[in-house]
Image (cartoon, rainbow, N blue to C red; front, side, top):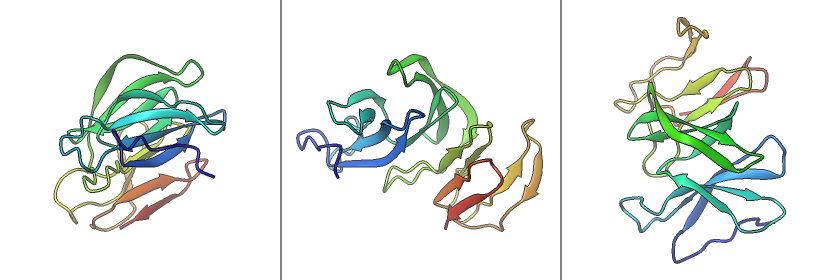
Length: 168
């Protein structure tokens, strides 16, 4: 059953939904294929029970929620925006991390995922096909190469952080 409705004057797609911890609300990317600059694209917050979605902030990439933050990509940089899903409110300005992330500009997909225990996995920026998936510990030290080099489009961490799945 559709839970969002496109406003054809502003958007042409709703993509990459992710549930909030309460299981009743979710975020998604609202984008417009005709808007070359991406000025009308935004991360939105909505309810499975309907109602008017809330536009949280402009974004040209998908976003995920983890541990009080929305993570998304801006100009190949992983950004972290504090977010309170219960109050439907962002806090402060988005903060740039040091991670460079490969964004799929044709779909607006940011290949990022994070587990509740703080594990973060993302697709590295740079040349297509010149990436590999590496497991890091919390201090940032490389622990193990999980793949050879390739062009990885999306990644997800299984609950508990013990496994990952990826598309290439």
